[in-house]
Image (cartoon, rainbow, N blue to C red; front, side, top):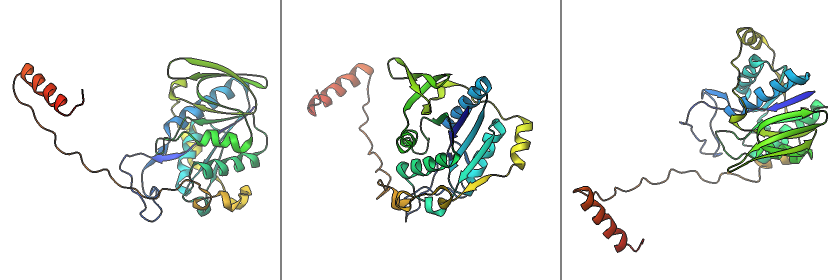
Length: 260
């Protein structure tokens, strides 16, 4: 079976900076890691490969430095990695990102299962996985906490707010996984040495037959118009006295403001 995992390199810090001209994250020079949810996706694919055989390919779209995230995947046991990198992709929103990834997947040829992390921690939109499914015209199952494959069918348990739901989908399909699905393995020393020496295959927009109107800022229906920090909260009124006295004062003030 052929498994494809779509990953993203994200900042290893909450102290991110914004480009004032494009209103996008400045990633150059910022320490980065594989998106945590995507590590679970890689682990899920590796476990399925160990059970059913086949090949696992990891893909990411990003600047040249995103190759380091792919090396982490190689160290974990992924068979092949592909970096989709081109200035034409700069400023892509989830629509343009999912388009570029879907075009790359088409170029790869045959595949049985595409697995993504639930969401990226630097965006939290959870839209890229479903977007890939839409571009490729495939069924999708989100929030997967358990995956079983039998023949050309996958049985997936979904983690919802109040209950778990079990659904079946024909293959090929797109799945997004939650962190509860597994514990990602640590890269082995042998894997890290192999990853360090590996040549990362890189594709540009023309290599994936990308339509310019669907790429980068020009192909992004959603764009950030303005970014600003919310004003600091003003200091509240401090109530002194014994506990019972403070409660009476608080209730009185709530009534004065007609909150209750």
